Image 1 (cartoon, rainbow, N blue to C red):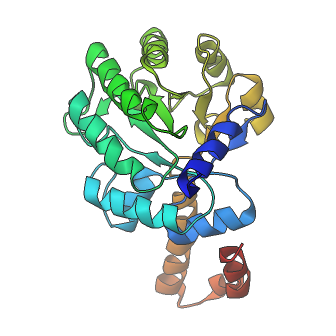
Image 2: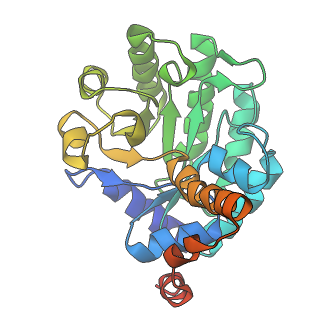
Length: 271
């Protein structure tokens, strides 16, 4: 069995342990190695965090840049990686399928496809959204390994408070062959339960939007996989901004009392 196939098997198994698990979102190879070394069993890329490392806004990364990063990440980590593949970098189902093939070739263990077109800032028509997921699912179904395809319904995340349409889309994605379902920006445990009660597949929830909820709370209300989006990236940026303000405004360096020990980070890199 190839290393990628082992990672796919391990990633799929995490969704069926009967417990919820956290899949944090590194934004570069260094943060991925730190999180891996801390003990997380799988990692997920973040489109906004990765774009930040290139000095770009979310949605401005090219397919080639993402594929290069995914290859580097998969080849230099030993845990499964699932990729925020945005809209598959294409509108048509045929091109989405071709791009998913290229992504799989980087060695990752899963990806998500969303039903939002960043260029037009619109949610895809229902039928087209389903066809896009189905095209990706057909690629995955031909593999000799359980690559995990996550289908994302973006309504809530894009400011469209339409529970019925969100559930309709998720159920259709389920029927189209997705392995995991996701509706980012669910904002309450009650809403999470309303959505997941209609579904059979494992469900991914974006934890920062449900304030105060624990892993146990999220699992009790239907979540299997818990991700963080770009939250860790922005958490890491904040002390840099504070340190910069201190140096510029006060000419002092008290922030150096809080830096990570290089030795500790290097130890995590080697785990």
